[in-house]
Image 1 (cartoon, rainbow, N blue to C red):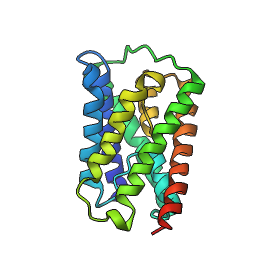
Image 2: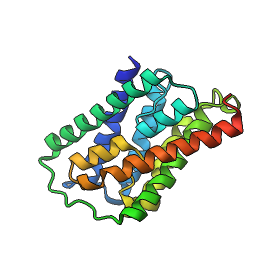
Image 3: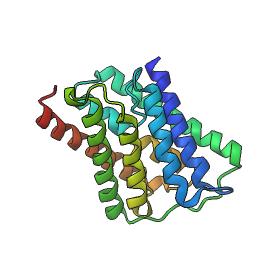
Image 4: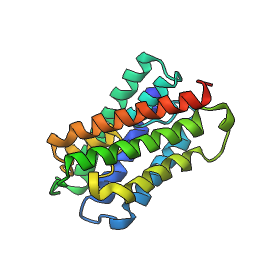
Length: 207
């Protein structure tokens, strides 16, 4: 059931991205608010079953935090990527074939932007959802969702603001990003997640 929850959460996250970013009826400057809110509510909905990752970088960070076993890590990744692809096609069905012009990005700047905010996202997730000091808190979903909201406003114009390899795949299927740029998100996001796990493990002694 936890794999299904990861599929569902990732699906609605990427669906929200596509529906609010793509014309017609794009949400414009309000899109990050909808996307961050979608992530927050899905984290609240699924956190007690799967952990509410919806992001391969987060799953990697949780694995390195020793809160997820290797088999589940790979199964989560599969569920997340399938959810993202399904959401992209659902978006195109609802809105019509994408006529978006892919965002042109500077690879070096995008790599840094995606690394920084993937790190920030995973750092927040690990601190609010995997430590004894914050166990049982009622704000974890909003903390996680608002990290994506902040990142989208801060560096969305630089990188597209994915901070999530599954979202990156989804926006690439939707032609919002070039296939040749997909590696940037995978490398930057997974490295950001790994660094966050290293720091949180050092601070909390894998507690």
